[in-house]
Length: 318
Image 1 (spheres, rainbow, N blue to C red):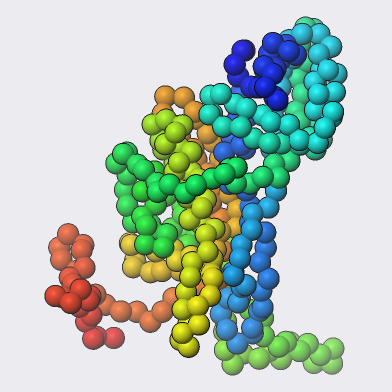
Image 2: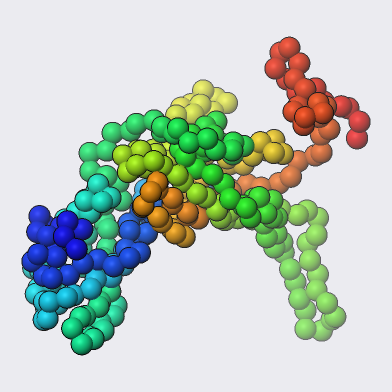
């Protein structure tokens, strides 16, 4: 199929009698993972202390499958990919160019008149070249209730899917205190004076919708930027510092969680008749503990009653 993929400005269908096969776009649109930040693990505190004064994105592998309809053009294509390290892959339908390098060939199958092969490429450039931030823009009506640093995810065209709440509420593993297990006695001696929790990975099932690719890339890039940007914060002593920690808020139970972005995986991607991108967004909750229960007055429609100074009215009952 012509005008499907250009490599270094050449139409691969015209030059090599080949085309990309269905499903290739899924890995291209996924966010790259973040590099693991330095951290300290204090036994007497929940979670971990992460150095989020800077956060960087890692390289990402992308697997593309090709079908060859002209005999013996496969070798010519491999020669093209190996004549230099990086090549520009332009996908006109996506409206985006990716600079990739060949990593490996995963499979090769031969039929009577065709050949099929999967190649893995490395994307060492996780952010669009010359990217300038634009605020997300969404005209599709979506449910609200999940916020990132005060911005509802529906502003990016993102809907949180079923199963995510269970991931958020699931208790993380407990940190193990001092444990002594002697050969000459039954059982073990454990320091059970206190219980502290580890960090936990939260896998949010998400769906991003957009009417066209201009809107899709704008919202997709804005979400990646907002997940990894550095904010200026001021501590109790007035010292300003950079921090990439985010606050993820769930309106249903009025709870906020400190976190940072870890990874993203495409579950499905439909670029036809309106764009649907289902993906799993992984956040690391750096500290997790359910606080003491507070009872808030609410009206019959389930909305909290707020006083004139915009504070929740709290029932003092236990």
